[in-house]
View (cartoon, protein in one colour):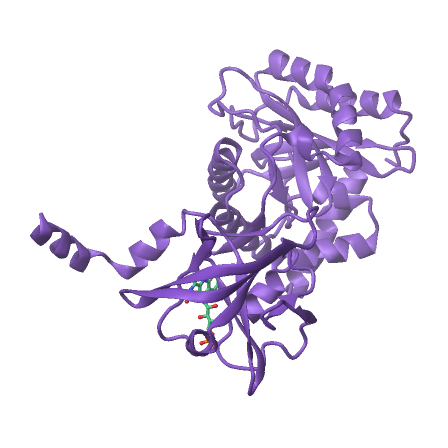
Length: 397
Ligand SMILES: Cc1cc2nc3c(=O)[nH]c(=O)nc-3n(C[C@H](O)[C@H](O)[C@H](O)COP(=O)(O)O)c2cc1C
């Protein structure tokens, strides 16, 4: 038994270890201390945990190589700062090697003198209780000498699969702010139309809205027979060209430019002109189509996984990479009235200012080719026009 454990230990690939352990989310804390000679010091840790209630003990696991940790150990008192979801920049700052991390950081002293960082959501002041060796790290146990919360309304910063996020409840409605609620009511108006489209033409249909910098799918009707056996309601997708073009087409040149810059790298002038022409074409014809690119099928499977398992950072990265690749060789936009096969077609619902508030999109699971007639197209445009009319909107088309 012992021999087997030893053998197994030697076989663990460090990359695999990191990747697998990255599936466990952690909060993020900055451990601070006051060095009487040099001033405040600190380091980011994801390994903070509570240990015992009586006596009140907590722990964190620093690498033995950390200079900051060695100094904290010598000082003998420290303070745990729990970071808020908008403090990812502080997380990065205190994960840097070396000194002077406190140059631009506002703080007040805890009873031990160790910094309580401004706007951290909780602080736990400690004195060193025990240090246990554990491989290349130590297990540092602190006895709690004082503690408090600063802002109960802020969610904590979370670290997961190498990316940052924040806690939110599982229910879409519970998360809904006023804007989302308003868009959900709009999507409800569109629901009978997308259900009828899905049934009549055997296609997948959804209503989505641009909220913040994401397109959120608010209503969905499946074709039944189609291979996409998941509901996409609540799915949030990054708005990166060519995604989101329908929302941008009527939003003015500034919005278009902002949208273009989201593809990551500096946008090639040719690509930029091509996208601008694409937006112009959408305005002229009154609807948008995405071409039947192989990579869009890969995106579909990522989006499917996001719909089923949540929008994990790794999936978002994959999606962003694919979108970036599509954007960088974006040439001639698809035109479903011509020869090229189409992946999806979207029609706009306008508000009373002529802004696109909802997109009704058909995903053609049958993957028709250019020679087939897009029999659902007229019905989709009619549905979008009717919803626009129902909500008192005005079409600039
Ligand atoms: C999200 C996150 C979590 C981290 N967790 C730990 C940890 O638990 N233990 C650790 O030793 N280092 C951790 N680090 C890395 C340290 O912050 C970093 O090595 C340290 O600040 C280096 O500074 P120093 O050498 O001056 O001490 C983490 C970094 C990040 C970004």
